[in-house]
Figure 1: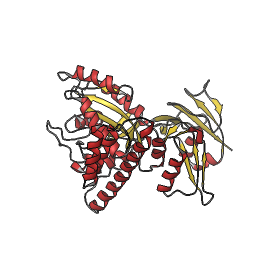
Figure 2: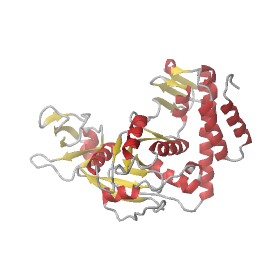
Figure 3: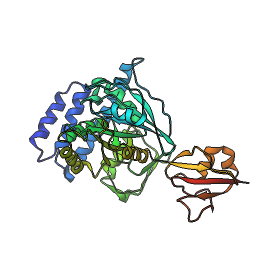
Figure 4: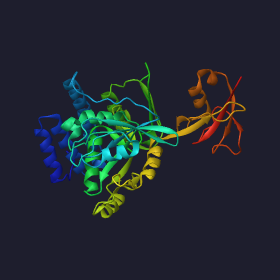
Amino acid sequence: MPTNVTAEYLAAEEEYRNAKTIPEKIRALEKMYATVPKHKGTEKLRLQIKRRLAELRREFEKQQSLRKGGGYSFSVKKEGAAQIVLVGLPNVGKSTILKALTGVDVEIEEYAFTTVEPVPGMLTYKDIQLQLVEVPGLIEGASLGKGMGTQLLGVIRNADAIAIIVDLSNDPIKQMKILLREFERAGIKVNKRRPNVEIKRTPSGGIIINGQDWIKGEISEVMKMLREERIHSAEITVKEPITLEDFAEALDESLVYKKAIIIANKGDAPGSRENYERLIQRYNDKFKIIPLSAAKRINLEKLKEELYELADVMRVFTKSPGEDPAYPPIAMKRGSTVIDVAKRIHKDFAKNFKYARVWGKSVKFPGQRVGADHVLEDGDIVEIHTK
């Protein structure tokens, strides 16, 4: 046990020892992690707690899956260029937002839990269709099985991005704390990226670690983690400075990383301005925050623009020589290249690719001749030439 621990830590440790169920153990470990002193002497302890939390999360998910068996579960087939889930506590205006953006016929009432299962709708913006999915209101403890929370969080894990909705007529900071805690418990990392560690399993040769100098911690702890994950032969390349906790995250394949924005709804309500300022002060460095009044349709166009950005897609128009660009455009991930577009059109275009001509933001002059690796931008027009 580390020295100079707080009374809160000792109480949480006792709570963990007395815990009977997985949810009870998870809550106690979270308290331990939050209250353990943060210095070099407690580095291993913090790592142990996080690793145990990850193990318990996986164990709980497996338990829930077995319990569910052939029972009720949620699944939303992806359509359009990207799937974005609308997530929030009950009665924050998710249904009103979905209807305002997509026109989908959804029941809207002034009481909680009007929506009892995910509801999809299609938003058309800049000639691209995005699928918005309203998830029933999450409640505190959702990740530990309350209110069909594990099923709902499964929908969120599967989506391409998250739009977090908070109610400005209530305490938005408290709402965010609840939602972010549930995401973290469910292994959903928002506006973060997986640590840049490449792990290639090999049939033999033992463990080879490239870039050891980037690791801020003892290599013996890294080797211990690898053994615990039953990785006995692999080439590992560390490509950036990381802590031992970062390395543990890189090993945890159950974690998902999602981009997210905050939609601050009910901006016309009394006290909303003050709550919006508090929200900005607390979360503006981590999230884009869009103020909104869905009921009065205020700032909807701005929200559409931000959802398009969140989807991380772009429009690419294709054309044949001597003809006008085809419509509608192809939806591609941002950062896509000319050869990516050729593959989308037909495998023969990629196989027999010679060069392309491009009109748009990514080139210096209209109709510029480019190669297969040329990176495109939103709205570009591409003309593929083959051998």
